[in-house]
Image (cartoon, rainbow, N blue to C red; front, side, top):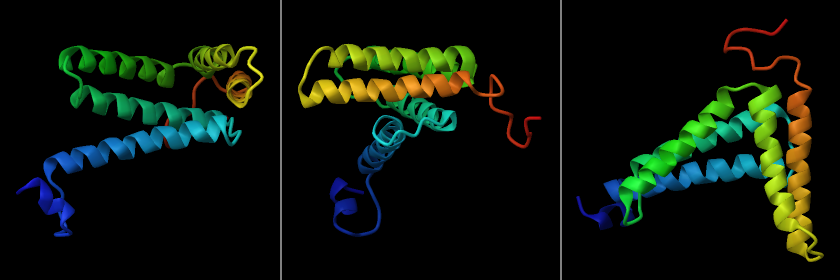
Length: 153
């Protein structure tokens, strides 16, 4: 099967096209969930969980499909990121998730700094969304979501 077969409308993708399509799908999932938080003000902690799940999937995929010349170092970097996001995802809303939100906010607010242009304003606004997410994590009735099939009391 040649690379062009998938592009010629014959109904199938080459292995390379399929890998690229999967990478784009995972990247869009991360962007979609992050956009819900920073651009649309969705600060429900369940949205944070969806964002973290998307990040984990993306980082794991990137660890298996490095693209730089130093493939081993890139793969290790993405494995470390996947582990970091997994620890946050499985952690408590009160500690790991709230701390992650605070770090996201601090980074964006720092980048926005004292700038009076649109980029500075946008950075501070996005940072504020992460602070609201942090506050909502701290207000969760339980430190962790109930396991599938279980309801909190």
